[in-house]
Amino acid sequence: MRRVNAGRGWQWIKEAWRLIRPRFGLVLGTVMLMYVLLFAASMIPLIGNVITPILSPFLAGGVYVVLRRVREIEQRSRIEPLASEQPISFDLLFSVFKDPAPRKALLWLGFVSIAFSLALLLLLAIFVTVKLSGVDHSVLTDLTATDEQRMRFLIPYLMDPGAWVLWIGVLIASVAYSMATFFAVPLIVLRGETLRSALSQSFTAVGRNWSAFLVYALVLFLLFLTVPITLMLSLILLLPLMIASVFTAFEDIWGDHPVGGYSDRGDQGRVVHERTSTVM
Image (cartoon, rainbow, N blue to C red; front, side, top):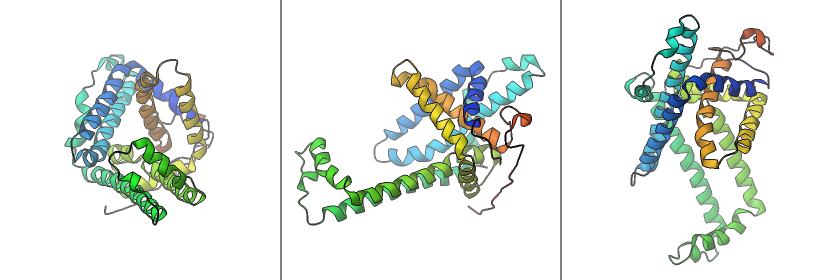
């Protein structure tokens, strides 16, 4: 695991575009298929909200397998030019389902996602219950009331000074969760890490490279602002780039394919080896 300089945040995005440009149709189709399947799963009555977070790590892992295959072909084509013509099948999106090695860790990652969401909802429910104790809140259960009326009733309670402690706590927990899960799927699928090790390494990697991730987030934000098309089309075009940039950041930090090569490193090639054993 490497500590990289702030400029790497921009380099990850540049490298991601360079990587996927020759196969942009494939990557775009793979990413869109993933989101269509997740949307379809979320629409299943009663169990959709449970299936979706469990299915998501498996499909995301398939996308990373596709990107790794794109990288392998790109590297081989430097020696064998005809290798660049080698086809890549959409079946790779579902390859993780067939691989027993990461299955347990990915299932647990889905359960962690569900547990985190439920914990936030429970915390909010407890807060609202305490705040509304002794207050007439019949508008919340009134079937004739509109969502706008319910929100008008709740907003003063959700925005008072006491509520800010809750929101700050939720923000801190959400940032920590995002840091721990940012690289969890590629670590599990591409490096064979256990869930605990993947969460720990991902959290540490994002924390140690916070300046690079700050630049990375800022550049992505500016891209969304400057793409001169509708929001939906910009999302469709930028989503493959975003996922590919996570892949190139993963390669850079873990040294599989350092962006710019080792000689272009501002941190002088410092490497931190961290592997955490777990029975999970």
